[in-house]
Amino acid sequence: GVPLLTTNYYKEYIGVPGLKVGNNAIIAHHFGFAGSLLQKIPYKLLTTYRKNYGHYRNVGVDAYEHYYADDPRGYIKLDKNVFSTKLQLQIPNPILDLKLYAGGDFSKSENNIGAGIGVSKEF
Image 1 (cartoon, rainbow, N blue to C red):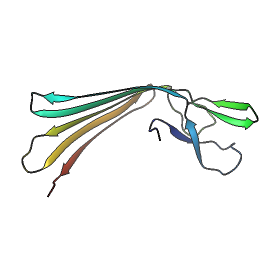
Image 2: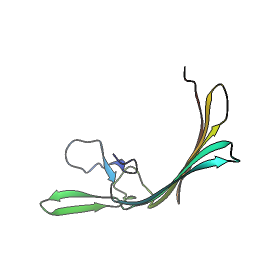
Image 3: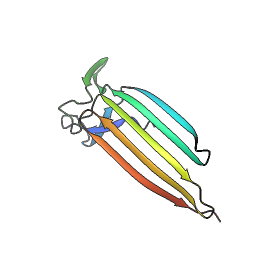
Image 4: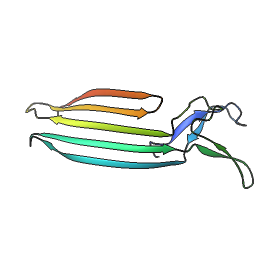
């Protein structure tokens, strides 16, 4: 599946209650860059810009109802424009494979950032 599609919960959906597609009409631009910082530290930078248009619900033969990404009928309100990024640095280490991660999602109403460390060893 496409990780940019999202789910949502709509009370007035007829049928089995629960999560439904909340955003599958999107335009997205994804770019990736890789290289080395100071010729010693490999990096990978991924960026994505996404424009959310919501989804269409089939309500009959050739009849559809449009739900916007921030539709008030849905439990989750998505911003129309979202920018996401992820940076990975591989730290030189003779004993362990050590990676540092940082990333975030940025929109008009909400910003989320995160960081992590990856440690592995092959035998």
